[in-house]
Length: 76
Image (cartoon, rainbow, N blue to C red; front, side, top):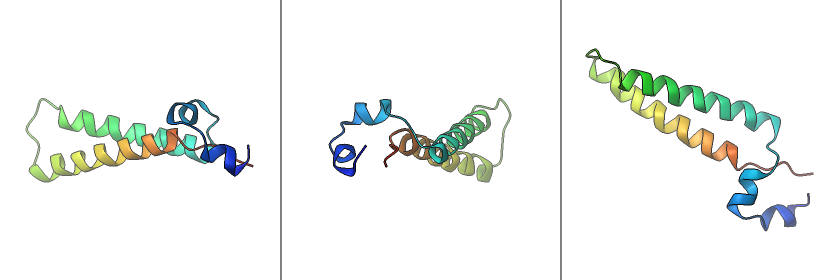
């Protein structure tokens, strides 16, 4: 796939295209971060404010990493 073809892809086409190996790993890491933060934020016990703040930041970082990694396209 040439750079011009990559530039003309829609968002749906980018999401369905082949993802490079690095971004597959990054996507998995992002999902793990988001899941860990969700577990902390929904814990039935009272956690310190710093822990919940960090968990919120991890959720955002995980979501962004996952979204960006999903639309990365392998080019030649």
